[in-house]
Amino acid sequence: MFVKGNNISKEDIRNILLIQLGDIGDVVLSFPSVRALHENFPQANIIVAVREKARELMEDCRWASDVISINEEKRTWIEELRYQKKFFSDLRRFHFDLAVDMRTGERGAFLALLSRARQKIGFFANDGKIWRNRVFTHLVIPESNPGGHMTQYYLGLLEAYNIKTDNLRPEHDIPDDRYQKAKVLLKNEGVPSDRPIIAVQPFSLWKYKEWGMDKYIQLIHWLISEYNVSVIITGSLDERERADEIIKKCPQNTYNLAGRTFIGTLAAVFKTCRLFIGVDSAGVHIAAAVGLPTVCIFGPSSYIAWAPRGAEHRVVHKDFPCVPCKNKGCEDSGFSRCLEELTFEEVQDVVKTQMRRSVSLNKSGEVAT
Image (cartoon, rainbow, N blue to C red; front, side, top):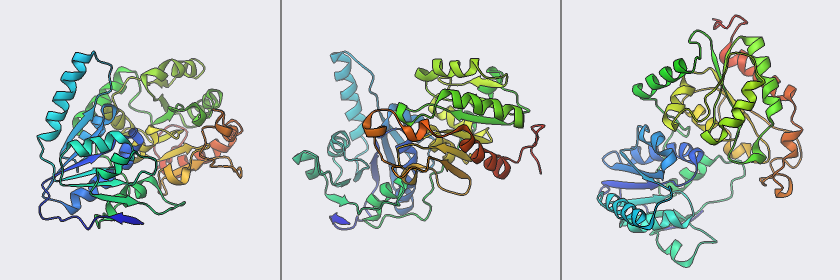
């Protein structure tokens, strides 16, 4: 591991900026890094910069003191000017002593620069512009670790400067008000309170990660007939119409919650469930962080790096020699043969194991003791 800069002095750090401008899954997998900063700088305020869509998750993170969010909505040039002025005014009011950028993009480096922090930690970017790497007083080139998880990758940035934590698992607490909102939402959507709930998330930002709607319909039919559960389909507002297509072909006790929740409430909804089944997406990371057992269906992306770890989590993937290829489908075509040829029976076998081990439901829908 290449490291530029000496260890960070812990005595004079009062305000820390952690920058994580990745997708929601990246934010969840950065929770242990926020925890590491809190444990090593207990006297410091930890302010986390995220994209607006992840704000609620970080607001509920017990180790974060405050959140700065990047709003990417389209604005007129006057509105943009006002927004940027307010944003950077809010950024600088914290008088940061340390800034940490968890990615290699230019936007995070720009935030680190404008934070005016005396010490700035970042990953070395091979393809970055000349100015980008020069922003940071401390730079890290991580060692290649094929068996490593993304939580370890993010933590490696801090561990290079002896900022460590013993707990490497993302954990997310649900405030009582969000939990109450989740219960009201489920009631309003007609989801019974006396039947276990299985969350199913068929969709991803990337189509090449999806398993196929017909197989999800088959899976939902089997779950309801075999275990007498309710099934909720989760996803974004853009995915609601596709979720409706699944609902129309499924039995009663299937409910469309796609687009019905903000991200903080979605985490609380997952807390009410017994099992999560879905593709490599933000949903599986949130579900695992709130303590929900999962079955995650993987295709070309690396389950070693991205899947939740622990005995309560299981991965289903096709045993092809090319898996994981880490491409956007076969030869970057957007089509993944490893998912197309992954059968319902292969997923069903893993779900059965999870139902026996983690849920232990009998056919009446009661929890077996």
